Length: 97
Length: 388
Image (cartoon, rainbow over all chains, first blue to last red; front, side, top):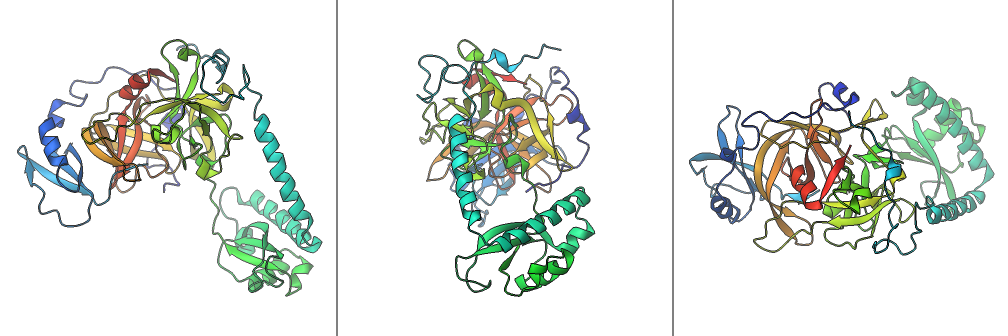
């Protein structure tokens, strides 16, 4: 549990919020960051998989993230999806907080 | 800058025909906590009756130690002073003995002393006798019980606060606790005159449980909120969560129609042990991977993270075997920590910059990732706009 402030200054909280300008092109959740629905449905149909999305790795390359609830082996999960490498995260169910 | 409007423009709950609030609700603004005050008085009376039966010597020592605590808190100024460390006490109260570790019969009143470091009752008694100069403590039969608490941290995000800000504990009377996200108002009559709290369905509506008009408490019941004494709003609207197989949800959200004088539009956080308030922007923005965001919530308080994904599909466990699929969500992570934990549901997620533009409504998490509903979808489905 966090009991201290996050790293970095929080001084920006002390002023009135600045107005919003329109986001730069490419910042609005690009289609490239979404998988086809049929692919999502297939992945979500795999036992233990309870989340699917696309992230960028440290080098900016897209990876398909599979949230896998069980703590056990993940060898049966696909290594690639739609030509993109997969990354397995999770180890516990996604719960309403 | 837009003109700031006062709460007097808003209508209090239960002021129009057809509202499904409490039938006992008076018209116009409610007299604050009328029924709750009576309950409070009854509880205080019971406490006084109990304390009146406690041995006067125990009460006298308690009073001396309270003076010591008062002087320690004056010295400490946020950090533990040497005097406080020497005294090794953080609090004092009257408890009941077990007849074994403390002299006397089981159920007899004893002096409970809360300590920074573990210590036996005998050691504590002897040391306090010299540190506090209380002669009664020299008696080895004095009924004292040491209770190790360590440093007692304030939990301001879980306390009762009026007017209640965003980021604080709240919840439907039948749940544990979640977070009050922020304030909203309807887009059209009659809801345009309602000042409302925004949070999750599973926080304000007990996961589809309702009913409309149900009490929303601040703090939430798990944090000591009592109904109706701590009511700040009544359930006004919620978007049902569809648990059917194949159903695709987008939002877990609800509104509570608030008494305008019981809520405030600012959000809270703690800095240096002091409650501070800030405002968020009124224009939502869409999340994108890499966006830095923050939230302030009941459990993990003020945290910062990064949006790692949009267009997220997740199955969310609501307990009791209920699992709902959500699509088009956003994912947030905090490197080396948690952006959220249980009880943070309902927190508003906003851009971690000078705009503090609303981005999402936090509702779920697991495996180190937090998930939020895009705020634009939340506002559209509830037909509300932000009051910031």
